[in-house]
Amino acid sequence: MKKHSFMSNLSNRYGARPNLCANVWTRMSLGLIIIFSISVIYYSSAAEAAGPELGVTAQKAWETVLSKADSQTKLSLQRAYENVGNWTTQEQAWEQKTKTIHAANTKELEQLRVSIRQIDDAKIAGLIEKVKQTEARYESLFALYSSVNRQLDATKAIKNKEWSAAIRTQADTLKPVVQLARQDIRFKKKELGEARKRKSAEVKRLRTLLAGADPVKKQIQTGKKQASLSKERYSNALQQFKQSTKLGQSSRVLSSLNSLSAAAEKWAGSKQHIYTLEQKVSATYAKVRQELTKRPK
Image (cartoon, rainbow, N blue to C red):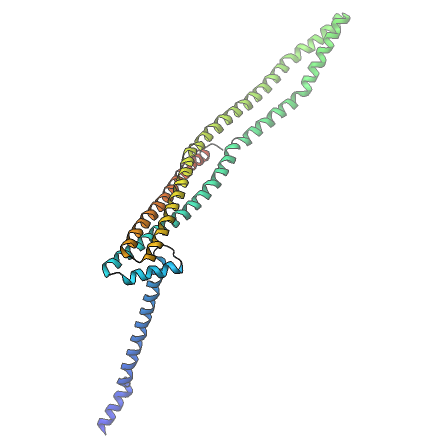
């Protein structure tokens, strides 16, 4: 009875041993299944991502070539195939990065042109207003001085010495005041003219800096033509690869894959070159923006 009681207590305390083993085994099995499933999904995705884009027929032909090749040749084929995929992935990445930076450069160029065109506009507008206000302030003085001079001419005609002397005295009194007024207006206009000259010189200088990107833009156009040719070569090489898979000779398929990989590398390189040139354009615009920023407000 004691022995039975001891076993019962042991069972109650730790549970049934066979059931515990079964639970552990079940959990381990589920874990292995999950890991295996994730691995299958991962490697399937990686296989789909690698290599050039193929249609259903070409993909089947490629898989047939792989299945018939020996292990060493199969490994070489897969590596070459993945190289093509890596280069085409890079080409797409450079293409997207180039589009982004080109859009930014285009927007920045528009803003820089506006900013350059508007240099010192507020200052010049203020000087124009000063000239107008100064001229308006002296308008009545000039009108009075003109009227006195007309009266002086009239007194000469009638030969009235007393009237002529009185008018002349008035004219002589107004003359230095009028001269100072005219000098004030000339000074304001000179100040305006110098501001306009400075603006013109600064606009010319900054536009010259901005035009420093023009030779690079021409290189970009040339680069785009080269990229287009590289794309055409890649397309031709891809067709040759598809044709070689139909023939089923692994050596020819490997050769065509290597040619396709070289074409893809050239294509990706041409896109990277265009991106590098766009960076140079961006750097030029940044210099112009810096020049505008450091100008006195």
